[in-house]
Image 1 (cartoon, rainbow, N blue to C red):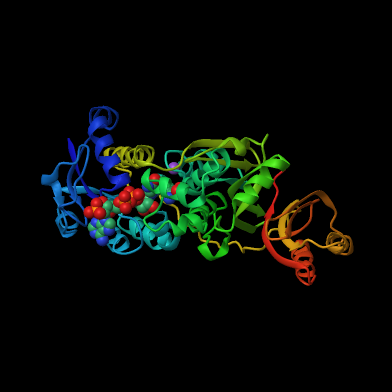
Image 2 (image 1 turned 180 degrees about the vertical axis):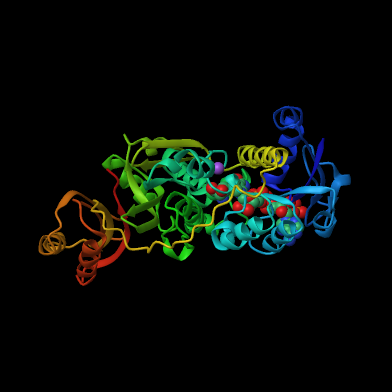
Length: 425
Ligand SMILES: NC(=O)C1=CN([C@@H]2O[C@H](COP(=O)(O)OP(=O)(O)OC[C@H]3O[C@@H](n4cnc5c(N)ncnc54)[C@H](OP(=O)(O)O)[C@@H]3O)[C@@H](O)[C@H]2O)C=CC1
Ligand SMILES: N[C@@H](CC=O)C(=O)O
Ligand code: NA
């Protein structure tokens, strides 16, 4: 039997989905007993040249051609953003169509509304592609690992920033050139600000943390810092000190209190996360029974993301065939409070100061008075007669570091504190 599919959006991910559904149709029919056929494809610009297997006779610019088509049982959404994707998905669910989406913005912000609508209409809504591209994360957390209390999530969940930081480290190319390349390769969001500012990773962490910590996590629970302020100097200093810089997403559940953060961090070159390069993502998960696990794979790009989308299509078809649709989603009733992290970590600080006798002594005095010991110090003169100073502290709380930074800013000869990042051990 054939199941007709409507595809909303046919860009980087959507065109990969067209290719993969075509390529895997026989196998999917063999696995599920149902043959998927993409019968209509919604795009914004019908005249745009399209490569690959996209059949132009299936294209439409009218969403109703798909949403009102009674023959279509499943809708795949790869438009991105909030509207009109939200309205199209809700409309599809209300008409009894199953939905597969790669849209983390939407699931992070309107997940509860979408999951509850799907539940009411007894249809599936699946979103494995929304986090970590090809890496199975949502399903393992929802099913295989539900036997454990998950206490820690830590990883690299944005391909664009990881690509930029890897290129700045390995090839010394500029931030702007690396970002342009990530856009050309289809890793970046249509507005790459959300990648660079850490918002894309924060949305993904919201989704992961909701499932891992069985709580309705909100995007506002996540403290977010992106990589915009990281310069070639930071990359160079980190390298000299034996680290690489990575944008990490970190979530912990400590007796029902959640700490959720996305922030650039120094990772020792010997740490497994240091070797996760370019568009690859990786996530550590710690559970009380499972112990530590690490998931690794391609977190962005056309076919890797399409592989997760088509994996969800297979699950939806299987559920349809077994008559068990509408039971895949979970909405968590409780909301665990979000609190600042209490973890003690070493910190990296880069500041510039007047290159004068006695300035370094004043800086060292502040560290002494605020009782934070320094484990490493680098100082280099700059061309404009200033000094660039890097201090790596011993372990301290974020609050304690803030007090030290305030005191450092009061030193007249301290011009600016450019970068402050925790250091992973
Ligand atoms: N790129 C990646 O690596 C990954 C992306 N995602 C998510 O997948 C989704 C799609 O991303 P991506 O494929 O990169 O995005 P693209 O910008 O490449 O593609 C978007 C597609 O949607 C169509 N579209 C946009 N707005 C409208 C509209 N208002 N009405 C109809 N069609 C519209 C575009 O039409 P047209 O072709 O005519 O311009 C295009 O075909 C996003 O939610 C993204 O976050 C998730 C994981 C990885
Ligand atoms: N822009 C995202 C795409 C995948 O989710 C990223 O860079 O990771
Ligand atoms: Na995934």
